[in-house]
Amino acid sequence: MSQLILTVSCPVRTGIVAQISSFLAEAGCNIHDSSQFTDLQNDRFFMRLSFASDGKTREQLDQEFRAATVDSDIDHAFHDPSEKMKVVIMVSRFGHCLNDLLYRWRIGALPIDIVAVISNHMDYQKVVVNHDLPFHCIKVTKENKAKAEAEQMRIVQEAGADLIVLARYMQVLSDEMCQKMSGRIINIHHSFLPSFKGANPYKQAFDRGVKLIGATSHYVTADLDEGPIIEQDTVRVTHAQSASDYVSLGRDVESQVLARAIHAHIHRRVFISGDKTVVFPASPNEYASERMG
Image (cartoon, rainbow, N blue to C red):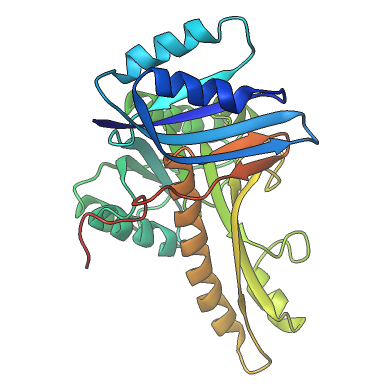
């Protein structure tokens, strides 16, 4: 019995759930977990099913499903959860998210295949190399930005990466790169936008007596920090915390939110619907780690 995931997106119409369930049943598949949502605002239906296939391969099921839905406008994909998504991580000089991702990757809590780490600084070369991962330092200036980005994309394409993670990478990506990797670049930042822009947002928040510190992870688009949101979280602070406390607490929530967003993406739980996302809950056993510690 092979474990597979089916993702479906289509315009809203009657009978789609019955059609998909009947197809899987007739193909000898047993559904273990199912989530669905109808976005009436965008006239879009989304569904994700985790199931076991007795005998038929992913390729066979895909071919048969295409034949069964040839006259409909259903977008679908069959996924094998045992195949780890290839990921390129990009980082600048703040290493908390990178280190957190490396730890989760190492223990199997984040089942991805990290194929490269790209930075515009050398700060984390040793950390990355000690994990037996390729490290690429590509300096970025106003003068060489186009050339540097072309080199970044070369690394992404040659490594066959399916996802780019901006783990506090402090450079703005070009519109061209955002469009080329649409829906495949995830970013993390504090949740103060648009209130506290620019340098040292945590100090600005401290000076204003903010009581909630948060983080947002989203898909990157040409509109800076305005892509569809995948995951968010907050932590409470009081008048007793210092500006340095704000930074430390913010660092922790940023790491957690980014990891959760990546986890949802690699398990095919995120669907983009217009300017927002539909994020389904995890299937049983998807949070299990290969080992602890």
